[in-house]
Image 1 (cartoon, rainbow, N blue to C red):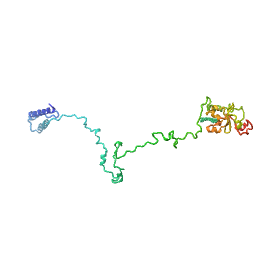
Image 2 (cartoon, rainbow, N blue to C red; image 1 turned 90 degrees about the vertical axis):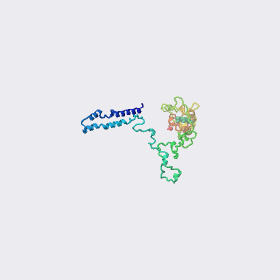
Image 3 (cartoon, rainbow, N blue to C red; image 1 turned 120 degrees about the horizontal axis):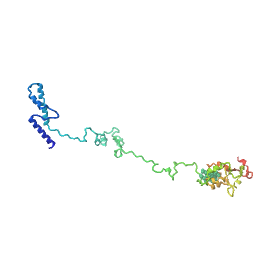
Image 4 (cartoon, rainbow, N blue to C red; image 1 turned 45 degrees about the vertical axis):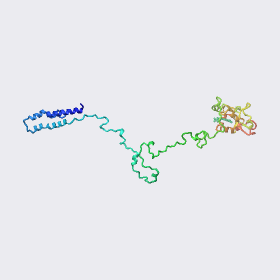
Length: 318
Ligand code: HEM
């Protein structure tokens, strides 16, 4: 039988038993006075004693309650509560929309319009102020109201995204062009030549600074000469003669320096037998020719007739 039917039959049997014997079935929860004691009370000859009477009649009420309890239908079987309905309330992540306050346009529409600007003002008519805007934590452009224009994006700088106009190799006419690396531009392009081994500028400096070497090509202990133009023209470096030149009024024998000249022998020979001051200054005015050619000094350039005939007058060089 199902539990309900079984309980009803049990309850019916118990009821019939009470009607027969007048006794309730033994209860485990509330032990009642035993039937034996009641019989003893009924057979007691000392009736009238209030204490005995109360003692004997007292079980009458529990017996009735027990009968009523039995007469009641059995309680429904206990049901196991599902874990989804705990006794302690817990936060439900799926149903928090109503607990967290949110702002929507429908809510703002229900709000009263602001007092400023006035309803009939030009600001409100022109759309400058559209009314209260709901506070938004995340300003996503796709979700913003159409009433508020998105902020303008910063435009790229004009000098980005491509080569700078003043850095272009073909357009260097701008006033912002980089300044030249040199203060003066040489008249001619540099024509450095490949010097032979042991003929570097350092080798020449080592050679010319030695006091043991007289590089002017004159006999030892020969005084400095007064060189008129007629004599200078004879030393062109050709026909077995040395090459002389004049730089700043002094006459130098450039023959020993030819293989050391960074610009090449041909360039240096352009000033042989004549005054090379102007040519020298046009190419490399920064070169310290006096310091480089000190050991090659022959004499001083003089006008024609000042030399008193031929080479001589070296004491006048100082
Ligand atoms: C006679 C005395 C001269 C001396 C002592 C001399 C010395 C020098 C020196 C030291 C340099 C190297 C400069 C440097 O690297 O900055 C040089 C370069 C040069 N020299 Fe002379 N030079 C003389 C005469 C001349 C003459 C008369 C010419 C041409 C007519 C000439 C043409 C050159 C050239 C083309 C260069 C290469 C320029 C360069 O590298 O920038 N030199 N010379």
